[in-house]
Length: 280
Image (tube, rainbow, N blue to C red; front, side, top):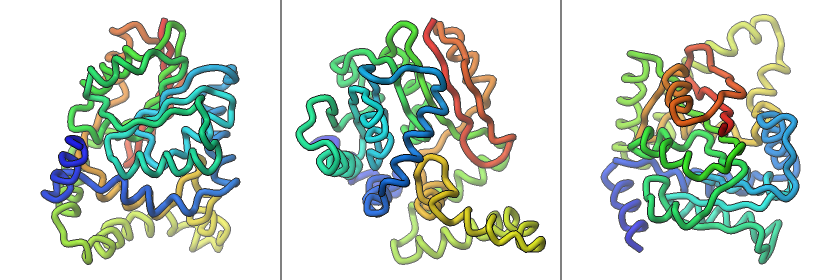
C-alpha cells in the first residue's frame, strides 16, 4: 500500500507521469501481430541466443507485452513494475495468455529497492527498455540491475540519448505536461510533436510515398509491437527524466565486468540508445 500511496502522490503533484494509465489504454490494442513483433524484437536483440528454459527478468514491465513475448519463447519470466496500474496490465495479459502459469510471476516493486531485488534471484536475460531513465536515479538503478545477471548472462537496456541543450528543453516540456490539467494534455502532446512529425514526413509526402506515411502510424511502423500514439504520449510526458551518452554507459558497464555485444544509437537525435551487454 505504501508504494501505491507514493505513486499516487507523485502523479498528483506532477512529479511522475501516469505510465500505468498510458499502458492501460494500450492494452486493448495488443493482438497476435503485435505479439509477434515483440518476439522478433527480442530475437533480434539477442541474436543467436537459446531461449527455451532460460530465465528472463522484465524490469518495468509496463503493459506486459515483452514479458508475454519472452514467455512465448519458452523462458521462465519474472515481471515487475513500480506503477501498480502497470502491474495490473501485466497480470491481465498473463491471465489472458498463460492463466495460472507458475513459470511467469508478476510483482510490484522498484528497481531502486535493493531489499525487493534481493529476493528475485539472478537471470539469464535482464530486460529494461526505456525504464531506468524514469526512476529518478538512473545510475543507481543500472547498478542495482547488474547484480541480477547470471555469469555469461545478458542485459538489454534502452536509455534516453543525451542531446545536450535539447534534453534540457525536453525536461521542461515533460514537467509542463505533468503539471497541466488533464483536459489540456492531449492537445499539448499534439502541439509538441507536430513539428517533429512534419519534419520526418515532409520528404515522403512531397515524393508521394504515401506508404511511408501509412507505415509510420500503423502496426508495422513499430518493431517492438508498440503503438505510435502511446509512444508519443510517453515521449512528451515521461517523467522523471534522465539522459546518458553511449560512451558513459559503455564505461559504466565495462568497469563492472560487462562486455558490449550490441549497440544501436539514435544518431544524436531524440530517442533511446539500445544496448546489449554480457557479463564476463
